[in-house]
Image 1 (cartoon, rainbow, N blue to C red):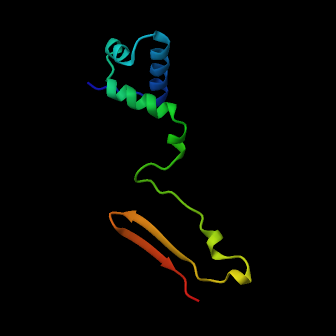
Image 2: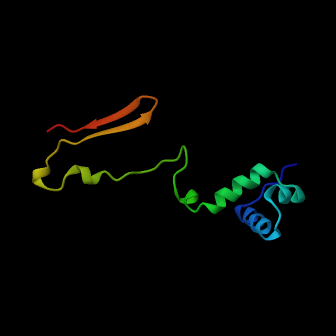
Image 3: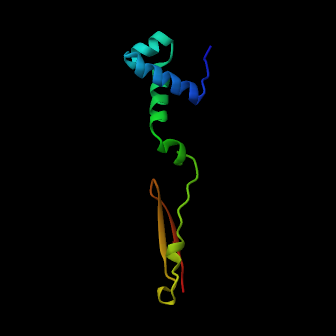
Length: 96
C-alpha cells in the first residue's frame, strides 16, 4: 500500500537524509521510500519559485496596459502577437 505524505513530512525526510550522511538512494532504501518520489519532492521543496509560479496548465497574467498609450501623441496602433507553439499564433491589432 502506498503511503501519502504531506509536504511537511517530505521536508522532514529530506532534512533527515541530509543529516544522515547517507546517499539519497541508501536513505530511500533504508526508509522504504521510492527514490524517484524522494528526488521529486527534494527538488520541489528546494525551489522556492515552484509554489508561486504558474505551472503547466495554470493561468498566468501579463499586464499589457502600458501598450495602451497614456499620452495623446502615442495614439492607437498597437499590434500584439502571442506565439502559442506548434505554429499557432494569436494576433491582436487596434486600428485607428
